[in-house]
Figure (tube, rainbow, N blue to C red):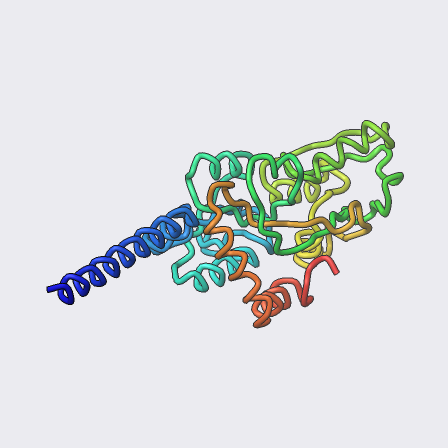
Length: 273
């Protein structure tokens, strides 16, 4: 009887230990996850917002509806690493950040510069560095800030390029004739092509793309800003998704996928070098 009682006591204590351990593990797991990665995996897709007016980073194919470009391909590669599909959502640049914070999509991959102001709203996963260049129409030689005197500068609205141009006009080259801004980069280039602007300030890969596409009109004539970080924008609450995407990107760099995409779209192994 005593032996049986002792045995029962041992069994009871083991059972209690097991329950406590399981409960503790569950509590610990719950404390370490925010559910963002599980949300994406359950949906089977990573929703990625792009402003499709920024070739070769993100733009619309010849069919007029299919998003293509470096960022689109990179988004698909990252989604594949997560075990899901990438759903590319085309949206206007001027509302792209508010769309993320209001949960219309999971992330933004649209050549977004990482700035202190934006970091107050969202987190970033840096994936490239890009300089800003002057793309001048033929016959206009803008190689440095001083050459902007008397010129009409064209930029995409709500971008680092616009901020830079406005600061230069206020601080150093006060006789800049005008700064014109447009919702999309394609509209900015069209403005210069039609003779209503002298020079565009824009990210280097975009400038090089247009200079190659229409060499009779555009030339990259100088650098406005040194390379600055560009990142995937993600909500601050989505820590698990952030960690998983960061690892996915690191793996894609290690296996040379990023280098392959860069060579495919830009003809160089890495931007900002």
